[in-house]
Image (tube, rainbow, N blue to C red; front, side, top):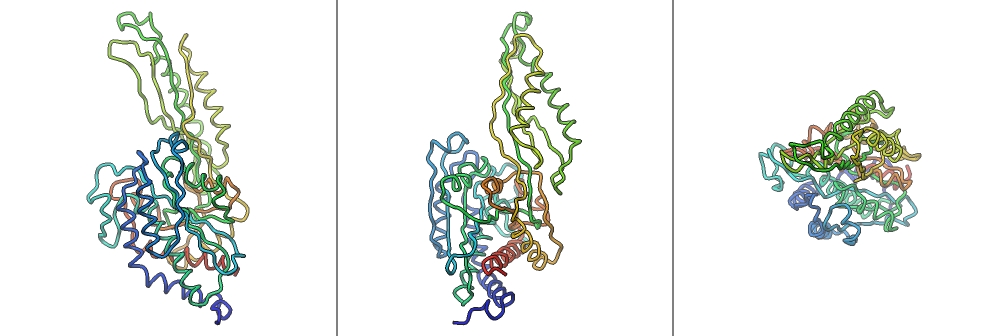
Length: 423
């Protein structure tokens, strides 16, 4: 048999890949519709049934699917009820080439109000597919699966490819990714050389923010409002803590990351609760705060400094302050070797999309950081518009242009084809 890449390594293989995607695009859209119709709100994070349904859909496409359920004892601390991680592996040729993991998450934030369509209807309107998760990131279940199918079709047509492609389809990104990608890596279920994580815009994302969530509890002693001096007012002790936090917000806003697209560290007090009744001195007030970390920062160092700031700010005698970490996600930083992904992705994306595509950072956090933390060069790229805002991701009427889905599938497949032929 004549191998396609032996004759025309950069033409015939690419043509075979693109033809396979064109032929199967209608099936790809139908697959994405079925994935979007599976409710996977997180919270509450009860995703095992949806994972099993997704596995069946993948098996109907001809894939062999490994199911890796996570024991309840491990998922409970993250506020979830059930998780099953799905892994698809396909070895090309002698397998001597790189092992490349493609990770997308199937859990979503709850739909909320304001939708003009059923958030789980997956309807197509005006050339776009609408539904919760259509953009972030159920779309890349389809992107990655059909990119892999295109490579498999090219291989069957005679292309000589070498290496392994793995799909890592997980369901806990909204809770931090600790029992999804991190679990797969820590358990030794996968040991990839490179990783591609779900994207949400035309950009090739090489860096992103980290995030620290803290709960601050201020305890006093209740008393009758007619005699407040007989108690310890927890709210009074909280006021200078808030002032210190907003002062820190102003200070860090002057710091700017050297990574394009990241910006400054951020602090938000997102939740406040406390008090017993109108006529009672409050004995307890709790705050929950969000501290966004730029790639130049270390989460544990920032956490220690923030706790010291909070504890020093409560001057009310007798009041007690407790700080508890809820979640720490370290930032994503580019690793040596990441250029192996960046160069072909940016080149192929510019060619397919017809616009310049550059590597950049984004001011949010994703599961990609777990691969980088394991020493695996990682970037984010997948289906999405020019910017995440255009897709209404995490908002009402979240949607994905079908043309962007097709383009991303082609970019990913062409890039993987290059990596598996060592061009």
